[in-house]
Amino acid sequence: MLPPVVRLTPPRASGVQLLASEVRAWNMEEVPLAQASEVERFVTQKRRDEHLTGRWLLGQGLRAWGVDDLTVVEVVRNERRAPSLAYIQGVWKRTPLPNISIAHSDGMAFVALVEPDRAVGFDAEPLGRQLAENAYDMMAKGAELDALRSTPQHVFQAWTGKEAVQKCLGHGMHLNPRNIQIPIGKESATISIENSKIKLNYWHENGYHCSLAMRPADVPVLTPEEVLLEATRSAMEAEPDWGVGCKTTRSGS
Image 1 (cartoon, rainbow, N blue to C red):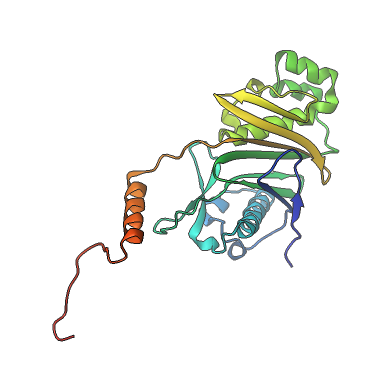
Image 2: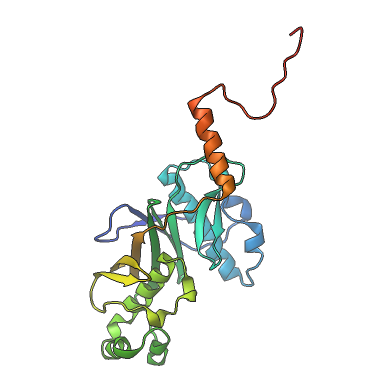
């Protein structure tokens, strides 16, 4: 029996699909978007289950988005391990795929999907979680650190907000969270990092602190192969009799 999928409703944010589901064990054949080479690297069953649930949930989100055939899509990673979607090599589909963010926390998996002209990052932590004060300086410094020490009820707004921003920029932990300043106590704010204006929303839902970050997406740079494929596809659509390669004619046929 498949686990239920919960649709979250982030306030002050439109055009985003945000789903959650309980982490469970999966067989590889149940999760079309999973790659054996990646799953084999996980040392613990917990991480394996989290990963596979996230990939399964992403598949549910894509089907709701209108991507019916998951066999033509794969999850790829950039040099900083940030995930994104792409058509597998040899598939001539150019319909833009959504940008995504995946999170896991305390037995739940979360997936956010947005239109391809925006980048997204999402993070969540359970409302009952506690963080030792001596860990605050791992994610904040200066006046922000002082503010968190004086108002510890906002620590998970900062924690989830910084992780959402890291994911939105595609940097992960390569961007030091101490260099990201979150407006403490504000549920909605726009912050500027690396010439990007990021809209950040924070709220409670389904027993979790939730933070969602979005910004205009970077313009993708096509490879020479992608340029050639796109030119070929456009030519074939414009002139159905146009072809590639040699043509032969049989006599007597």
